[in-house]
Length: 617
Image (cartoon, rainbow, N blue to C red):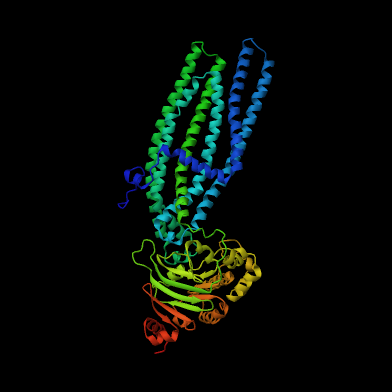
């Protein structure tokens, strides 16, 4: 691949890259996959099975009645019977045929509903884990590979699973009905039909494993290609893509990445077609031998003509159903292989998920926060982002974290905000050490506005109300929070007021300026009414007047809360109770603005450096 050559999905390196799967794993895979279908739609599944069972058994009855009709026709033609004796059997055959066609139509509709329900269930389970797993997981490329496979397979392969499972059940019931009818006509035909599916099954299972290995090996490259797609279609990036003329270059990269995938896929498809051809020829040869055997029996007067017609028709139908069952099992096996990735993702990530979205009682209001000796290293990093950091904060106090970029300020707020777990050290909330099981409840008492705050393409009301989803309909409180953040006037003036979607992606929506978006994010933070407020560069997109007004009101708005400010603008944090200066992941200075200036250390140098930019020479 480094030399521009596409990877061969069936060569040794690719096989080594994916989990080893064989037919012996099929029962386990099917057990887990069937459990998914049952969780998604037990009633629909039972109804589908009943319809398929009835339809399948009617096929056998239809075959026997058709034999009787043909016998009556032969007897009438040879003078051994009358056409009047044929009428009841014809009526029965027509009725059974009509009922079979109706049940098949019902079965199609049931499968449409079933596959949609299964797809939702699988995708919902993946998303549940993805939203509750520890934030460190999103620093791990391997996690994204597993998540990509789980997301894609949950949506697409669960549909394939539902269709494969219903296809197998439908074929099995039909095989039982047709097999019983053939036993009544000529029992020896049943093993002939069964033997014809052996090469088909061998082909199907090998083809399924080949495609699974190909898809597994393509995951990292597919993630890159999908990212290029997101860059080309993302609203936020559209301006820069055009301003820098990136479109043609990115499209070329997209095309090359897809060419690599298609070259590897063609190799897989050629092998699959070759196997399918050999399997079909072998199966056809066995079926042809069965028909030759029937003719031999007729010529030896060991089989009546009516029985031969019924047997030939039954053998053909049974062979079709057996091949259909084989193909369905192959498809089910392939889907199960892919959905095993989903199951493994769910098992693995649940083991390290904190399940923060699960309902839990809120923690007590914060009176005293103690951070003692925190050390933290991002997954895959060699250098710690924090080294032995300690600080102290009480209700009603405002502290500031300052330092150059990369000094550890934002990382520290993420640990205090219970988004990461420290490698060592402790955080004590009202004197009690915070454990993993405390993270969910504590987050309900913490309100954070990040420098890269989220912009939700929902209504203005929802954008504020998401600060407390349990109070999403509390419009008076939402409006009050927007007033506190200086967002009410422009939100209320929108086309549909607070019901206006904040994006032109949706009909009736509008776009906001970056400064307006920041006020909306501030309103969301105020609406949460938490006892610990963390603001990471809360005024980065506000003008100078708005920034000054914000800091003047910050203490009054948080008079009964604890407030942590992160800022690069040192002039904005002069009025806080304490300033902690970080450098290279450590707190190197702490004190008030005046104390730190008098100490003439890092804070004083950085402050004077910023101040000099505004001095007139």
